[in-house]
Length: 131
Length: 463
Image (cartoon, rainbow over all chains, first blue to last red):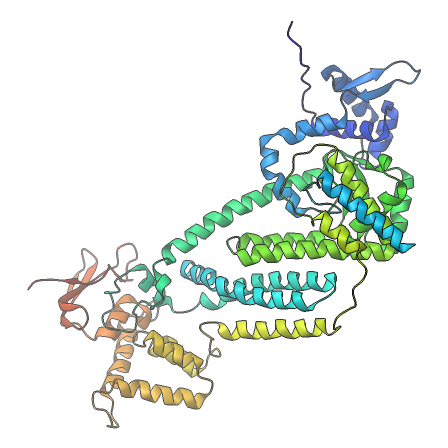
């Protein structure tokens, strides 16, 4: 029998925001998520509640009824969604352009395992000499 | 005319880039601190951007006639005068330079705007505020780094590595999970690096750099300068973070752990923009070399000043002071009869005495009776100007019109044929030096009644 692959829809911006809160804070109630959202910009509790209902229907979040307060968890870990979001051909084409504008602690090119090992060695040596 | 001016500006940018590039290379060799080098690179990029604008401003208002010469290859329209196409080899390229540049710059612009739009999206979507604990930690770190602007710290599902976005209201975006998975100490070390970027206004500088990179997208020296600036900026931020943190080892450890974590998420590698981590770690952990001449700043400052001076003098045509009679002489009186070489020589003169001398010799060369006080050629030339201004003047001064120009250069035609119903006027010259026998100029005012424009180069008819 063929393996069924569950294809989840790409979250809208509003849905992504809610998912982000869940990924960041872990399983949360609607009220808890609403509190976090409001810290950044105004949001009605009823709107957030409705969003959760829609997202449950879409399969983006799963409701955990085990405790008295109903908590929600994301259906997929964040890495999966990141893949989906980045997988778009258009975003890939311009990702380099975005990267060239961003400044940060790391560049976009990842170090190899060998390089990481070398760096750790350098660090060890440094700590030894510092003593 | 804008297109010609733009073409010349683009061509000038080639040597300007080389000159500033050499200056930067020298400065980098002399300077020891990453902060100084970053500043030198940024200034060099700015200098090239400025040079572009300034050159355009200088070249644009010059010689309205040159445009026509460049367009009509063969320059038969103005016989035997000074309006010969200038002898550069790359004259032939001029028609392609501007369209090519517009295409390239346009594509690069689209690419950059899309990237910028993605960056904006990162600031607004898929973000989550951090706990009050982290807000407090950030506030204390801000103080230590000397950042006065309010900085927001957010967790982001779109950011793959920690980044800073925005200048007026900067935001630090931490990829989800980092705050939970890294020791607090290490996160703080990373935040110090980000705050260093905020302190140095690197986001804003990066946007300005990308403006220059777009305008001069074709210039390899610009690519090098931009890359160098980004690299030295990263090093500067590392230096600042280590200084505030007080422990190079801890800082290096934080970067290594961050890199390890980021590597685990198997994100597709994109073209590198940040510094090479290996190089940075080596630099952070390397014992401080003895500082070379603290005069480094002074020396490179002097170098850059000399370069700017060279650039300013190197401009092909240094404009005479506005309103000076010599300015008028070269741009109005003799504009149609002066040779390019003569004009170049005249513009290089520094004193009015020299200019007077030049003008004397200019007319003497053309004097049919050399040595005699009277100069018929000069007298006739000015008579023609007067006539052209009186007869062909209208919205535009007579000497500037097509008929005026042809009259001034060639003198009165032997025959004139006017067709009022057709709106054309034809001038016949029986013999025109450099053109031939029975040369006919056709002027038409179709489309703009009263203003006669020349319809192409003169034709030779058989009589």
